[in-house]
Image 1 (tube, rainbow, N blue to C red):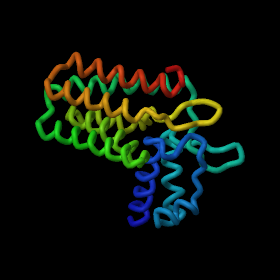
Image 2: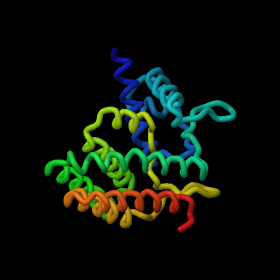
Image 3: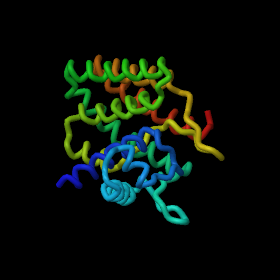
Length: 212
């Protein structure tokens, strides 16, 4: 039972860092290093790595070892399409279901994001970005939608593809777009909320492809 708990601890930590691009594609994940870092057994780390491998977030290298899965332009396009389908659906439900407390939660996440950026803590900003989109899904209050979203393991658009992966310098734009979505939700303007979300996701895809 304890081993299962430790394995879940490692899994959640690694999943969070992969989806927020703190661990970029091509990064090798070593069992001993992560066992020390998270203070769990190597067996727990191996179980977590195999789980992430099965979910498509990791791949096995040519000479063995676990690596964060690489992405192509086609992958980014499909990710954007999937996010648009799921998050646009969430927006439509959230317009009807969002409470004042939900709006406050979104605004707090936006403030956290801004603070992290101002302080140069960009990994924290990426985590806040993940929380923003997960909160939109939660506000829809549809357990099946939430389950599909979580199982899809959708990463953020915070990396540029190229000969070498680099983090995007788009934090101010991301902050502005998030706040526009929140304002549209607050005023229950579905058309604006959908448009802001779609533009946000499209820009993210294009920026990752270095086409903007």
